[in-house]
Image 1 (cartoon, rainbow, N blue to C red):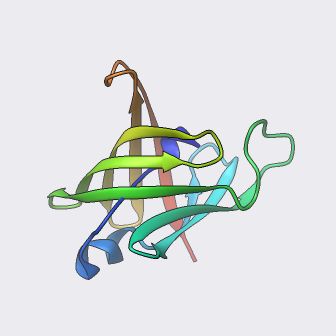
Image 2 (cartoon, helix red, strand yellow; image 1 turned 60 degrees about the vertical axis):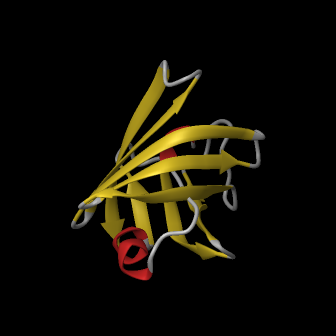
Image 3 (cartoon, helix red, strand yellow; image 1 turned 30 degrees about the vertical axis):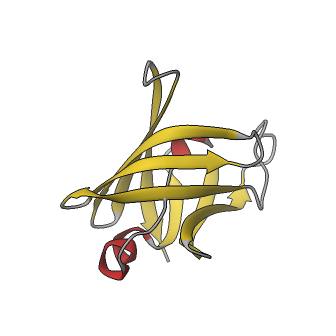
Amino acid sequence: MIAAFTLGMVGTAAAADIDGQWARGDGNAKVRIGPCGSDICAINTWIKPGTPSEKEGDKLVMSIKPASRGTYAGTVFDPQRDLTYKLIVMVDGDRMTTKGCVVAGLLCKGVEWMRIN
């Protein structure tokens, strides 16, 4: 779920680009992204059976800010693993790419997402 995302205080207009239901490009997960308190959370709503280390209900807490049109940058906290990652989110219509990095940005993983209804 490291590549899943994420954030902090984001303006309503910016958050609207990210809010919603998303399916991961590999077909192994679906998430709902939306406000949770003063942050934005990505919560697993479906995980392909047999997918190790992820389950429904897992969430990421994102603290990101707009960096440019359709791009957000900041950090994401994974409470299941007690880890914080650097995060870049790029949204283009119904497509989203997330890139999470650890170890001072040396280890990164990107994930493609499609908006679903």
